[in-house]
Image (tube, rainbow, N blue to C red; front, side, top):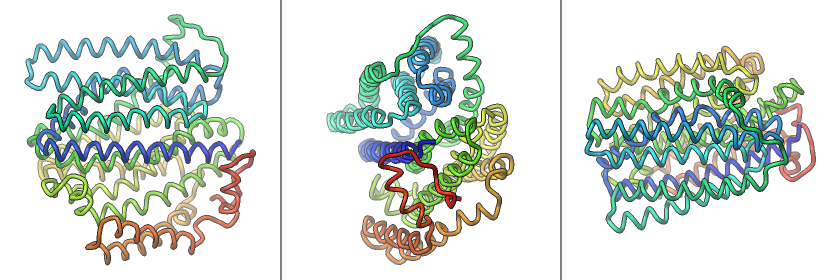
Length: 482
């Protein structure tokens, strides 16, 4: 295993997520301040509907590419043009059917829904290209493409908001920006792809669809686990409540993409290790879990204690009802980091079948929890449903999968130092909660990092070897990583 590449790629992908998601949160905050909770709720609803109708176009192709191309980079061109053609045909069909359905219903928000669907389809193509960059361990190109999209999205979106184009203008700009990013990303990938044979025929198409089917089922269940709350909430309440929930959920979703970035480097490496080195597989898993705990704990503390000033800082006083929603969502954030690692272990082990059954089970739990909690607690109920689902999903995943690699004692050992450091951080942030928001966060992080170092969370060997691992030269993870 080439550990330096894994650590370097994880760092780059983490930087991608932090930069682009920060820009995304800023963009969403501008929308909230310009348009208010009502139109923010409509925006969230349109994207939730669009993400649902685009599921067939996604079809789990990203996970398939990361696993298969990660194992054999020479198949990049074969998968790019073969799977890309299938994805394109599905996308055209889905958009056509959606247009017909909207025309028959005669909805007043037809333009909003169509623009959201077009944007979501093109965004799925950008994610598809990013899967190839990750599989080829070239995250710097993903950084370039996503940064281009995020910056242009923010700048042009701000212009149309000031021009008074409101939500239609925002979605139109997003559609144009993501289309440009997809074109540029395709050109880059075609240039850097390793030499390889590219054959396109119906038997290959059928093979792609069959291979991706378990991932597609997982994708559908994850939709119901992650986004169905917006649609259920819209059925029970109005757009304003959806807007309050969406404002909190936007921050939660942005933070959950931090583990997604790490897993982007983790999955190709773990797919290789699964067939080459059981010991390396287990050590890399423990090391990754340790890093995920270290990253997630301070985020939970900040969200739980500073929810009110964070909401006011980003969205303004009118969104204060989003603060208790953000506090509830701080707890499932910890579970989400854990669950990303567990699901990627199953994918790396070619166990999409059990994962599919498990995600469908939790999807059913999530839909049921939404129906029960939203009817009783409105938008706060949608947050409670996320907490319930993420917690049950994490417990089941550990019992079925990770227990063979990490005993309860080892898990407690991994968590102990970050949790204790997070407790000290929480006390510091609680005392400084009336200070300037950035000062409160800075003080808390300083206390947390000091606790992590003082408690020896990362062993001396890991600390000494980490710079070398990032820089160059093949090396294995230290035995003390667990």
